[in-house]
Length: 251
Image 1 (cartoon, helix red, strand yellow):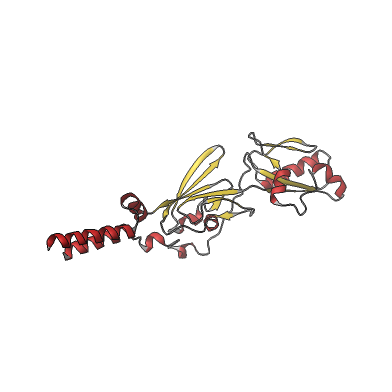
Image 2 (cartoon, helix red, strand yellow):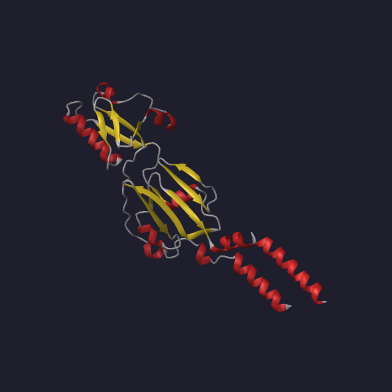
């Protein structure tokens, strides 16, 4: 009887427990202390919505190059309606200048490009051009507390910050198997991130890009319980029934 009870207890523990090694983040963080951080600006993509404002020494002279004056105190939603939607062929239609290509440009590079067009074309002298992405978003799915799509206005968001938007991983989230799906120049790239190691801090996927998708897989105890009986409480109930049956049979 003791051997049967021991087997049942071991079975429950094996199928319901995850080790600390599977749960703790960045366990070798000391190896990445005082390391330089390299940021890369995301390229503008089709369906991005851009807010572009043009300023000049004489304010009135810049008005033809701005869509409206709704930017002052306007909500993000209103700014998106007034913004420039990047077409599938990576272009925008800009006042007075016409069709402008955004292909392979960051918001900073597009800002400099428009500024040069205004100066070289004799439109404005020393204009100030500001370009901002209005609909940057990241989708977070799987074993997180609040899965969904999250908008962000920051110029740079890290992977850990993005997971923070979703309320962190659940206890059943597989820290060694976090997928980041990204589209680059028309190609889909999938990278597997191990959050228990600090190696991802030096990865190009440490910094989230607009339209990234993050998927957190389930750890082994979760997969085992889901595929076998369901959860720990159910396993304990089944074990209790088995023990009761054995006692009655062996009397």
